Image (cartoon, rainbow, N blue to C red):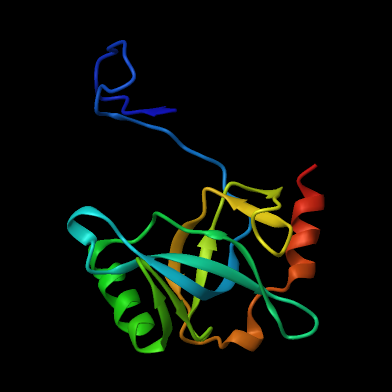
Length: 152
């Protein structure tokens, strides 16, 4: 926790001038394989992307789904890039052509049977769009495995 030193001490967890700082691992460049429409005031946007890394055979393996990190402007930009790539819609979820690359921050990597990669990013957050990269240049499953092993 960080505290504003210009403010007096006040006990409690929601005093308004303290910030929780979470350590981040090395960011990954990942492709969006699917997306889900957001909820609430942002419900018209595809704002919950599923993230994929590249396998040695060119297949994309999902390593999680991101929920946070977009500003309103970034979400609108992301949505405008993803929407034309929709190939199929099932309820609130859409499959997309894997063309949009984003840089993702996260706290750690854990093993997971939920995703076909066998791994899941813990608390992934949007860092930036990567229009300078295409899907063939994203981080590999091997890189995800290396990062997983390095955190032990």
